[in-house]
Image (cartoon, rainbow, N blue to C red):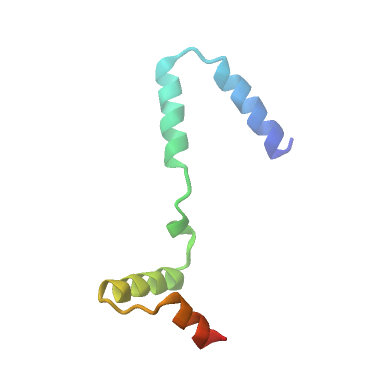
Length: 72
């Protein structure tokens, strides 16, 4: 069974559930399982982003056009 077929089967099962408490539990579970892109980044990628944010907060910025001139 492929993922699409599994999803359809799961939705059909959920549609037949009449228990409000169970639906709430399923909703909570699905919301907790949403992937946060930050957690998908490597430690080094996270550090680089944090470094960039700190630089921006200190006013260390480069205009986009200036950046393009530097790399071209």
